[in-house]
Amino acid sequence: MVTALNPVLSGFYPDPSICRAGEDYYIVNSSFAYFPGVPIFHSKDLAHWEQVGNILDREEQLPLSGSEISEGIYAPSIRYNNGTYYMITTNVSYGGNFIVTAEKPEGPWSKPYYLGEEAKGIDPDLFFDTDGRCYYVGTRPNPEGVRYNGDWEIWVQELDLSQMKLTGESMAIWKGAVKDVIWPEGPHIYKIDGYYYLLHAEGGTGPEHSISVARSKELFKWFEGCPRNPVFTHRNLGMDYPVIYAGHGDLVDDGNGNWYIIMLASRPCKRHSSMGRESFLARVTWENGWPVINAGIGKLCESMELPFDEYRFANEISHHDHLHFYDNKLDDRLLGIHTRNESQYSLNARKGFLRLFAGKGKIEDKTNASYLGIRQKDYCFEASTGLEFTPSANECAGLVYYQNHENHLRMEIKRKGDNKAFYVVEHIHGKDNVLSVTEIGQEGLAEIVLRAENQTASVWIKTGSEKVLAAGNINLLPYTTEEAGGFVGCTIGMYASANGEDGNNYADFAWLSYDAM
Image (cartoon, rainbow, N blue to C red; front, side, top):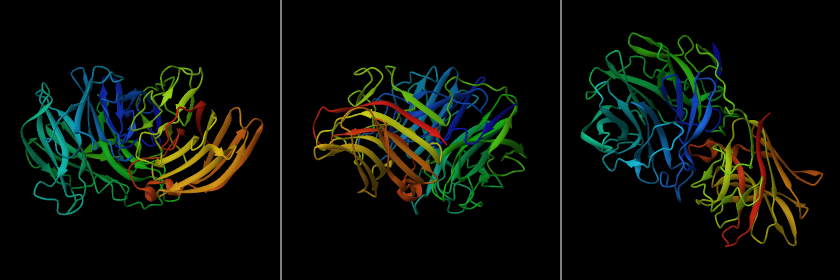
């Protein structure tokens, strides 16, 4: 037996999809306008996970320029069939729905196969039937006209894998379980004991989020809903419950008759979610031909016992990320905004340092600024970076706590007259407010420390042997989903910018560290 702790993927890992290949399990998640896109995780016991890469790791696969941080990649689905891995998703910023394939989950993954105007809507999935045929299932606006926000339907159509094109006629098979349902989305189809089962989310991704299920003996036929729909939700538990927004699930079996579901949910602090949606695991049993999630409990559990031998990884995900820069390849955990290419950074310019070039892009604009960050995973944490930087006029470099381009906290080294100073700046709803200015030494390594405790933060700057509290009692609630909007969680990262000016300056970063407290 092994114990799984929820969430199994902590931090901004929303819209999880899961598949099994033999004794190996793989999860993928939405990445929106971060690059690289669609992180992929591997496990053998459903409790311990390692990141084996990012599926969309080339710019030809993932055009994102100019996107809002909550645009880009929505709701990927991963499937394994006859020796090939398939990932299908939507780039809402460019190109719509597309498929990539690989022989190995760690890649390389193919160029995108775009499905064109015929594949309307979002949240696509692939279903491989027992006769070898493949079907596309997705959600699209009501073709008779959207009567209200979220008036969508779930539909299927055959997919010709040899040409990666939809073929035949499409058909709506389900609208959702609740009268005047909003946002029936995230659909997945499975064939179990002679039935086609449709699992999907509805009610939106916030407080009314839920999971419903329907079934049919025929794929191209209107499905019947489970009498207990929605079969899972936390919306009846209130906003003070430790886990909220539960929904958007995907089923997997272990080959021995045991079933599980991976789903998203959020952990709020002070009724606000800084980490977006995370990935949670639950047990599934079957009663009268319908799935029951966490029977006898009816909600997500903090932990669960699983009938697997424990399997650990050398680099499995944890609540501690210590990134140093001695390799010639960026760590898979590091995220850029829109892109992550060598016009922005170098790992070879100075051994043991990551050099970020101070480009024209500003993090408060919808642009590919020189930013590389990691996900927040806890409400009590300490993050730090060490950098060497000699700014010219208008240039800055440092650490950023980032929710989106209009809402973030910048901790940056800039010029102040003839001297160098450390600025702590809150950027809320598009407006700067300078919290503090601390003059610092001109040369040597500067260490920036951000310590967060339950939505309140303090920031230190250390140069030489002197460590100074630059700002305390900083309110972090403006950087939550509830205040800033969108679908992502916060990241913490290294940043350099010439703030719209041309130049060739840079900052050298020695590390980026994150530790839960």
